[in-house]
Image (cartoon, rainbow, N blue to C red; front, side):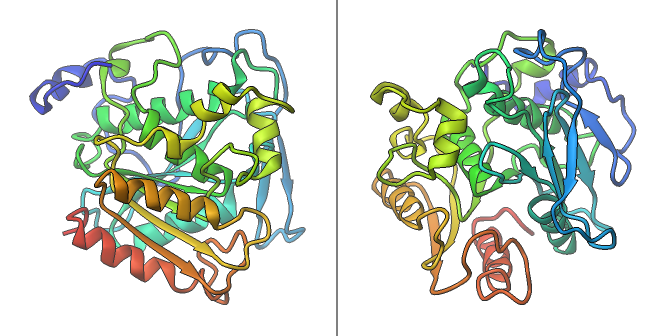
Length: 315
């Protein structure tokens, strides 16, 4: 992994595909030119189902993703901070609206530019499927950082948020950003994909069968993965002194992903001296996103904003 000083970023921008214009609201940007790495032999049609069954309040579940993208949501007055959002779905689908767009709009309300990641899923026929989501997350952060000057973003205030299995992807990026998961394509891949902060909501953290969400484990690593593979994809085993600060949220009555995932990660981050704040709410269940009628969903956003200010990620 090559970490370049800030003054070299403008040189790299010459090779950026998107030129010097500001991104448009809702603009969808492909992560890869041509076939994504590992998807060269894949050919499938993307499936989108509205799991709400309500055309006025869609909540799309997306599967069979061949062409990963980021969708841009810009606030009226950007403050330079940005966040890449990784929606959940157990690594079997992506819950795009509720755990992507809804959260992006909240970030816009506090001046943060948001990017919703539509990442490829590991069990859909891609080569080396277990690294496919991480490839897309790495590439997305690199694209955002490469375009920081053009998009009025601070390249040192780029965070990642993940919900449920998307939380595992976010935590994995925060602890494995330097893992080489694909051959370098262009100058963008010279840029560090390390996020500057992590926000983890009801997240899968560990692949340890004692803690993990079994569906996510099986989608990512298969039915009976060896111990060394479990450790390699368990974020709590990968924390070091360069792991970014984290804000962690879960609920006690989450019967889908055990809050022990969050507690375990919090403990390891504290042991390594990484700034971390955790809130385990007494109720909220799973998948609360930013739902105002939910105990946890109505409370964590304000706490998160305060934490971002405390850690100097918001002015």
